[in-house]
Length: 311
Image 1 (cartoon, rainbow, N blue to C red):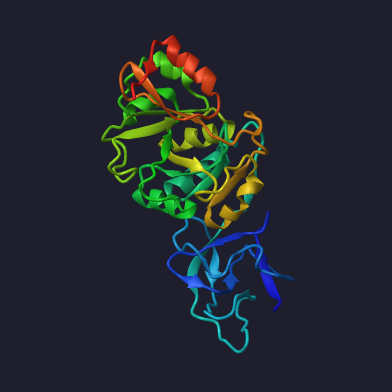
Image 2: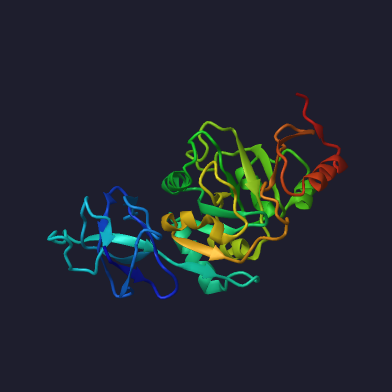
């Protein structure tokens, strides 16, 4: 059956609906353009989930049928099925292609607004593409886990704007100058968490992994958002990590914004992510994950006379 695609002004939209699984959609809204016939299947899996509480209003779902996986122009009928009552729905923004210098102030403020309203976005880091949300929001963190398909007991790290911000969310057990030598950089430091951090983030876990990124896109957003973000790799759990935004395209329907800064080449073809180092025991370190810049990270730790933690 032929269907009508509804495109925003930049790229094909990706759809998300919360608490309602539907197989026929009909969208209305001033920022859509209909009439491009073709198969709907490559863009949205059906049945699918669409978030009704996304911060970005885009249109309305005007027709819902549990039997026919098609999309039709608003007000039309398929196989004699009348349109259902209109209900609000959201369609995520298209991919934002950004310059190497990061986002301008207006675009960064828009991304910060998405995060403030519990949205989830895709951003380039210094190692991989990641997905991020507001760390201090229980509902945003829950949605991040749902999107990724991550098991609840597996922790996620946070990212803060500056090295100086670490001590607000963690008890620093190493010389501060050591942190400044490691960060910003492709390292996640694990420290004892403070009560300031959202209790629903990694509940029952007494430590927190913290990153500081100097990548332009993230720094642009963090300068406007001024809160920690929960950050994890942009892939479904168990799937390969991504160094090109196109590689995580399957996630796009579930996100509120995607920021494309091109391939991440700083670590070559390495997809291991950041090195994760536990610094919670004074005078010692333990390696949770060997990742990017691991050898230079260990050299820095030894420079400050930290020793491997006894097994």
